[in-house]
Image (cartoon, rainbow, N blue to C red; front, side):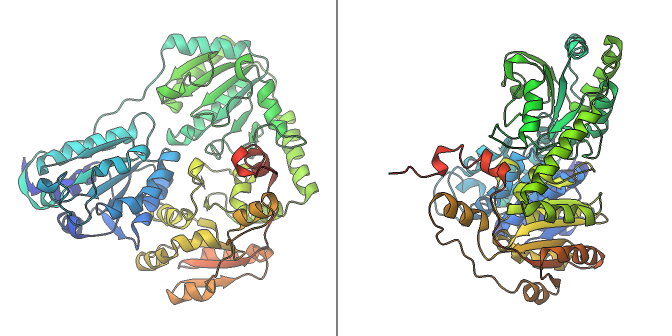
Length: 558
């Protein structure tokens, strides 16, 4: 036992769990915690300019490092502000721990109008957190931190929250610190694995569909081994981009969308639909399994709720993606699943067809995206905002290194990309990190340029500027006979960057990025590149997935 304050117990517990960065914004209910962070050299504290950035940065840090991303906010409004980042982390199954202040212990639930008080605070973030707890004494803190981290590292890793009243942060008690929980990887039963191996060996047109769970389990290498050992081609979900290099001869990429007439991406939809066996690895199949009940689904997933949700004809393999694949590989060899001829030639032909349609139709996003791909190093992290390029990148941006493609998943929240990219750069300071964002999204959290300067977070940010919420403007124009209030009044982004002491670079045309991005990556400072663009046509991927298929997205005609 050691006598310490609640704040000290929290900080020491975080250190023991491997936490080395906390993204926070200090406030009156957090003084005991802030003082403990001040006195702890093992943790770097980064103060943001808005609570929203705390969870976004923690999410980016977690996804880039595999470590818990920790955010610290005051109660009430502070937690509300941070909730958007929790929603994104929830959508992308990211390990984010939010530590939220509370009102004094004896005032909780009494509706006395305390500073930042809201009733039933934990309910505010219940839909976007996996687990929550309120600690009422310093001695309860180590077990709360231990359980929070265990929750993040078992099953589907999603955000968790610990609430700490201000008096608990300063009170001293005898505290017993806890060692990190010993966790064992979940492996399916031998019987289930053998059943799966036999089914794979019997199949004639198998396919692997890989999701974000592959990256979360560090199973990228195992996935490639599975594909190569069986000659089964791979399609990735958007969240699974990078789990197998797009340049790999067995990778179709991630161009999958619902059926649409004369749509080139249906080449992959048809591939999935014709498969007699689909091996899902770490995916929730958000677009469904096009092969459906006519196929056998081998579903490898750490989340038991996802195993048989999709279809009845399923062989469920409840387990960690990496150890499950590793346990399956020798059984596949015994079952004779490695005798299949290579489909690499067909995969190459399909990929060429997709590229051909894009160039033929001259969608302007494609050549700009290709230019960015050609000049950014393969090992660079690229964080994509909700922009006309971000939509296109989900299907067409080529990714060859694990975990380097970062987006907001199904959360689709504008403004997340810049602070998230800052968190990525904090976690990977020696790797190139590029944020691709629109002018509308950048201004949500542009004040975090101050944070970047203060802490030397040398991020390169490309701001595509069309002085409007371009996606919304185009959709209203195209489907509702005219846009309305989507235009923006922007600052001079170069001057804006320079006013913080950052570097501002100005492009005359997107083609200038071939020169400006390499220049920006060499600067030992945060860089903002202002790139003017015109409003662009709706990419067919978005058109066919979203607009005509959603009844509420187009008006009824008189």
